[in-house]
Structures are given as structure tokens and as C-alpha cells.
Length: 195
Image 1: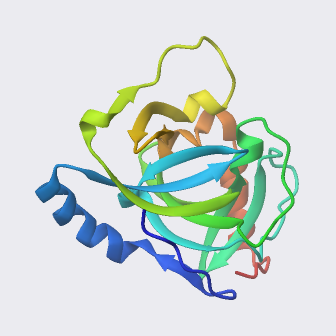
Image 2: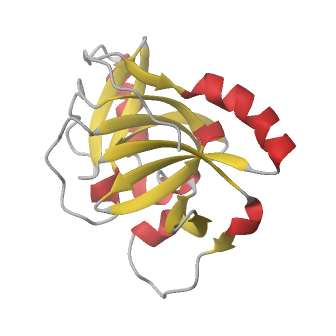
């Protein structure tokens, strides 16, 4: 597993370079690259091609009247990016921010639009190669909460099971109603966010 280095307030790792080389390496090895992270003691994975970057989780400006899992917005080099707490989105209690807490900026599809979304995670462990043959559809567990809306499959990696996230299901119009529009309007009206 590739380690993710830590820097004070700097971008922890820009995954664009990983994504560019990941496609070529994965095609040759018949594997795909996944970013592995933890939320509430469970390990998850998301395709590296959906990850813009991994940064320290700070400088989030709260926006009133949004769902509790939407923490607010950040200013990411001039772009206003909504940020959600994955713990809260999955129905867990919010955790205290630690030195391991990270904000992963993902590309997600919201309707027909591709948008950036910040996701606060307990820890990022690195990037791994997973063969498609080691990924199985998530078994039907009935209506078992918000976590299972976004978890679409299970990956076997070494001696662990990783819950594979569909990034597009973290942020849906059904859950947001007009909150995403409100976040976008707030960013355009000049509220300052530090990122």
C-alpha cells in the first residue's frame, strides 16, 4: 500500500499524477487503483480516478440551514467546494479532528453535472491495486442505513475486506434538495472561506 505523506497545511498528495499513471499501470496489470481510507473504524476504498487531491481538513466555513452532514464550504484555489462529513453522512457520530483526519476532494456526478466535493475522513491509508475479480457486489442487507446507499461493492485486498464507495452516491439531489444550490450561491455572494 502506498503511503500518503503528511505536510503542514499543504496538499498531502495530489492524486492527479497517480491517476495519470494509474490507468497505464492498471491496464497492464489488469488492476485498478483505489484510495483506501477509514471512517468509524471501517476501511473503505474509492477509485483513484475520482480523487482530485488529499489535503488537511481545516478552513471549512459553515453554511447555515444545510443538512448536518454538510459541514460547509472551502475555498480551494479560488473554487468554492462543498464539504461533507462522511461519518455523519453514514449516520455515525462526528469524531474529533486528529492529525490523521483528511479532506479528500472527489469528483462526483450531481445530475448531469460533474462537481468537486470535499469529504472529511478519519484517515487516509494510501493507494492500492485491486483486481476486478477481487470485487463483488455488496450483498443485499435490506434497508440498513445511509452507509449502504454509497457502498456498492466489497473488495478483497490482502487479508482485509474493503467497502467500495460509489462517489456519486455521497451527494445526491434527493438528499440535498436545494442545499447544493444554497452552497453555490453562498460562494458567489462573497462569503470568505479559508482553504
